[in-house]
Amino acid sequence: MNEVNNTLFIPLYGKAKVSRQGIILKDPAAERIWSAESFPIRGKSRSRWLAYNMAMRARVFDDWTDAMLRKHPEALVIHIGCGLDSRFERVQSFYSNWVDCDLPEVIDIRKKYYDESDRYHMMALDASDPRQIGNLPESDTAIVALEGLTMYLTNDEVRELFQALETRYRNVRILADFYTEFGAKASRFKNPVNEVGVTQLYGLDDPAKILQGLRLHIRKEHTFTPARLIGELSPAERIVFRMLFTGGMYRRIYRLFSFTT
Image (cartoon, rainbow, N blue to C red; front, side):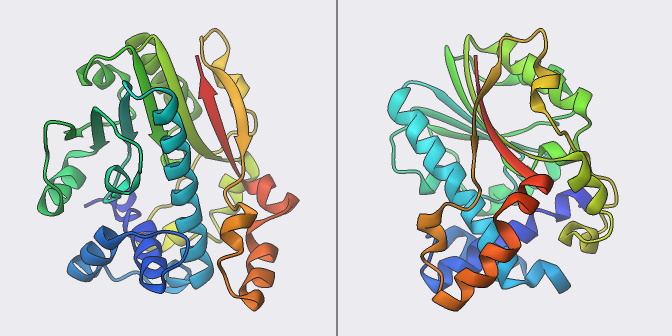
């Protein structure tokens, strides 16, 4: 696996850790896979604060996906850059068709732990090649999760991905997280992905810039760290966590948006 693929073990560790603690996110698949893979992450990657942050991000994506499925039960759900995530098992709403996508070597590992079915499929896909979006199943509406992905794509590649999605599907709902330009620059000095060999990340201050001429537009900016989830931490942990992952400084680094056609 290359350096970018190795980053998938960082959120996997975080989700496994909090799941064992019984807070934020129940994810037995992460617990099982982490125990089996045991990738040697170290330093900041093993921080409990980062684990809480990764788990909260995943929970926000879960809850958004649930909400979209309640509105669009017939929609195709697409998780691009899925890594070893088990969102298709965690969501509560019924779905008729779900496709988890990642690079071929990641999908090979996924298939050791997850089984496909009539409603659930895995597909090798390179998000930097918009032509591959045409290989996804047909649907009138697509619900698309892009979690922890855009920072590995240039701004032009993100725009091309969005354009390919809105060309493929009449109705598109996207949730995506972004580093700001400042966040991408700062990440060179202090980011857990550096510890698995990643040295280049990309940032975007205003996602509206890549939407010019597209049908997609920004629907809403979301928080990664809702108060209800922070409330599951111990009182002392809440104080430290809020200092690290909430407030204006964190928003200067990292932001979360939903998009719709």
